[in-house]
Image (cartoon, rainbow, N blue to C red; front, top):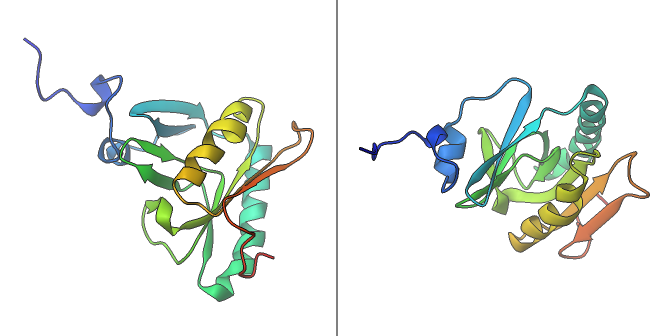
Length: 160
């Protein structure tokens, strides 16, 4: 007999944001929700995280006066079956929660690594743009150049 109360971890697909947000943090891993499936990534290497932390510090200094905030590795809820953990996000206001709704995100920055290049350049920009994020930027030493996707003209606040 199949247990109708099967735990979220026992399913391969059909997960929701509630399932995702109820997961316990995993040391050394980032778990994203992509089309109802959990996708597990290794935690960023030290160099990668150092770049993200420095970007967050610079961005936070630039937007804090406007009541905005830059955060690293925060879960962003895009829709019922999609949640990403970008390297850096800028939110339209101070956030005091474990995750943020995409409607409160104005900028996403990914520090691109060889293992994340496809998702960071092709899939995530489309998903964030469809969800209404104003700007998505990516940079990394493994790219021929940085890239940017702007859904709207550049931010008019302090990021200019």
